[in-house]
Length: 339
Image (cartoon, rainbow, N blue to C red; front, side, top):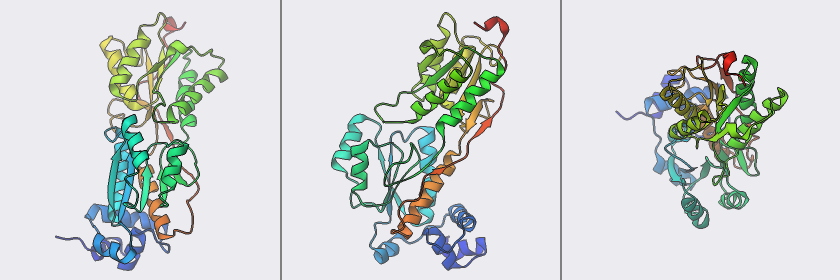
């Protein structure tokens, strides 16, 4: 059966007009109630009439989403959460996957998204020229990666602080030889690897530990890359007693490498990740949790609010909370393994 706006209103105990205002990002609805209505609409599968909405507003009823890697967990989770909010408000999603330098250059040169969308959610960090191209669309812009930039609503976390909490935990346990598995920022202009590396280096400096470039390995933010990077670290003359992986996927790869080398975690090597991937609790991974889906929902909600009040301008950056999750992959180092 087709779900109507009345069904959503009955499920939430409010009027149909309140549901309409909430789903379209209009004022007059508390944030708590708006969240309840969006959740109820998504659960019931309510979809407003896009054709009627477009005719009335002159808009496309479409949101453009630009991603670097649609198949990776972080981006897929953000996209899924945002799409549910957009769909509940009566919007379609037009997806552009720019996973290669060629695809990225072609997109920003031709800008095929022009006049096809009412707003853009960018899950990549544009360089100055790319940012200017997106602003030329004259539509609301939002992102969940990187810091503040003109014309964009930014919803994200403090990557450096999260990395600091992970590495400080290892230092407090007594580790002195701490490796890091990271990923390069190029060619995607991604600031996350740089910010998390600064957190790693900052804690080492505070603890009086001289950084060793040999203890840093590129894992490419994938499970396979994390396994390869961990194998490189284990081949060192003096391998690390603990490893900070900049993502849980790389941490899981590191765990697999350690298992293949018949090393015990955390008895032989401690491992800390970052993200709180949905499988992290299953493998008992100590990690830094960030609200990935919540970032997607909040970015989508703020875009809808800008569409409802176009003269209000983009909101200030929103910093989401992070938490340190202590599980089973970290412990004090064995004295015999300290160098």
